[in-house]
Image (cartoon, rainbow, N blue to C red; front, side, top):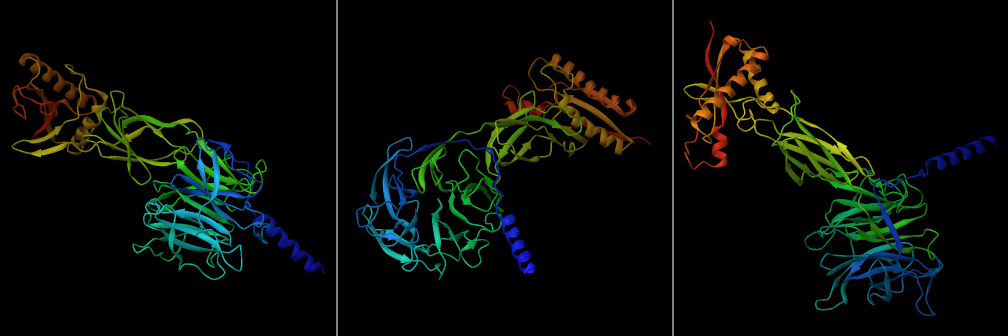
Length: 518
């Protein structure tokens, strides 16, 4: 007897510790405001999307004195209703949705194709009101709600309940929950491709990132196909079904994030869907409702986050203006682009709990790519300086062997070298150190703005500044020669019709290999 008692006790402990953890969860980067919809009763009401600007709900509310009672729930069999939307989330005037889709059995949730000409819906089987089968029907052409060609779909299986269908915005995938034999837990979320002929491909389990050993239900995909929202009892939550969101990337689904305590409770939250980016509906059996599941309206306040920093040279840490900086989303789609000003700074607005890539482009520097994740859930500014690497000087094979550098910068009409030019000069130093017998001429050229005399003097001073930098950094003066040519040797002889690009091309410093010492 003692042995059996210990076995039972151990089994009880295993079950106890295998239950999902109830946590105290903060906002997690989400700010929801919840309000009543004015339509809830003591019976269950669960939202199920829109058809022709009317909200469709599934409800067990009774219509008439002879309503048939479901022995499994002790409520009336569920029917589909349509409701008017009166603004600010208020719903009104519930009417039975369709004499064709409503039957004597329990109706489940429903989803329409984007053109609202096809409907996927679930209905309980004749023998078991808790087991649902998946159907499809077509809107009769020219009608406002006459559904025809009703079909029981081929993916249905014996003793399997298929629930919560949802068609994505592209109308190429149907998501649903089911307790199939290969499920990780009780109910898992699956997806079937919708074939061109309207049939469904073999369902695919979304895998362990999404599904758990417990129930995972009510899939909903955002209009841009970027996020999967769903309800789960298995991921770490506050209790019951909580809402979670997972990014959909090229590599699959990312680790789901609990949507926080401004929408989740210790009770069940199900059937989340948006009507726009900042508002939507969900259902919950939280105790402050009218009874059963109630439909609630939500609005979201976006948390403000930014990332900012400076673009710097990797070796010298010099600030780099005129750098193109691009913010990309997790699928490498460009979100925003800017060019750094004199202070070399960049700044982008970002969303919380997202992943990004920041890329850089600058003349004479290698393209940079930097991953970034906005890991905080409150208003914040992330600081991230980006260091990029200079390329080797451009080499041209002419009658002279030249290294023409176009990113040695000077302030207008001045000859002092700007710090952002140090990276290029350091590359010249590297070449000279690797070839200790090489002698170099430093030739500076200006554009044709200003007088000949001024430009000649300015170019000499600029060449001298570059020479002094090399000497200061260990290159012998005996290996160097500097000379200014002013505007006398333009690469583009545009005279008085020079474009900005022409002027920029003619402003240059050339490092010409003279000879090698014996």
